[in-house]
Length: 387
Image (cartoon, rainbow, N blue to C red; front, side, top):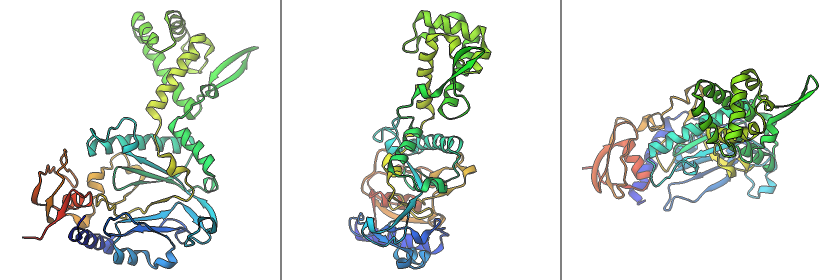
């Protein structure tokens, strides 16, 4: 990024911060703060700062106009101490990061920016369901300003968790190493022992839901089709399929109760396959190092992302489904104006930031400012003198 482009972006970021309303996280003065300024190279982090050093946050951001702004998930006795052991760690929020680059179904070389954001929204919905329904967390949801989302859980019960405990939470939401045996309870009913799915919550509820839906579909299907579908599951042959189908049709109450004895030995195999389906459908591939790092710095909501010019936007929980980052995260300060840029890296897909679509070739253009800022921030264009 050349000097003119850096100066232009820094100036416009400063304009944004002079008008923006930013809310500091809880216990802001106990957190470490960091930022990356608009310098040549643009990757040098200035950190180990406290609000006592920065002063008024709004004034600091308006004056410094940094490229990126961060605060620590952790709370410290002395956040400005450079020695991590000397900071006096008090505990940390539980923070989850979803980035489209890390989604198993996304190939960054082949998936459009809009496609990556859509896939990340689906993973976010799964994560919120897991955190809210399975853990009972109240969470703050934030668009990262680039290709993903951050979710903050600040319940006092999680602050003291160490890295190992946080890794267990990550494994749970990722469905990693799901113990199917742990989803099954052994109960004594009228002198007999029954193995029953734990359907009250968690992954057991999800697997049970798939089992009930499958049983309902197979009861309605022609017998040949039902048997063929059952045999499509690895480990279920003709004999097991017939036993399971008979149980599904003769005793639907047992299926709804999660009774695995009714389906014979094949029922356990079927539950294992359905558990795989549940994990594939409902898990969320969060970035493990972010959650397990008890000293992590995370982006400040409503700051600007220096790689896109989009706002790191806090999202009300009720608005998550309707949130469109390519319009809702565009700073109002950048709308209604145009800017002249020289496109140096056209890329293979159109730019759709802020509405409309612009497919650039190399050369000079006058474009809507959100598009120009996006291209300059991603080092695909440079600022040129206005005509």
